[in-house]
Length: 139
Image (cartoon, rainbow, N blue to C red):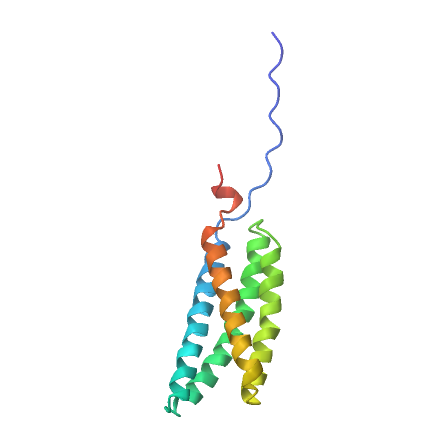
């Protein structure tokens, strides 16, 4: 009888919890960005008071996007997830800053396309976060 063959050393699994804050923050960001479009539409329709809410929500969006960068780092380490969400969330942050600057300078030819771009990126991050299966969940 021969000795049993030892199994390969199991790879350390990532933590389970980091995807949860990423999901929560990405959904929150998408809702905030959608609200921005609604607030802008209301302002353009003549409800001038919505402009201050649009401005306030823009400040909250940049804070949420900053927190999303931190959540992406947590998905990567200790979650052992992919690295690329860090890049997308990190690049999203200055794009949102440019969006705010374009809004205050009334450069609508830049402000509107940037808003659509931000919405698209935020939607993709939400989609990815709910379709991503961490290594601990894969069989």
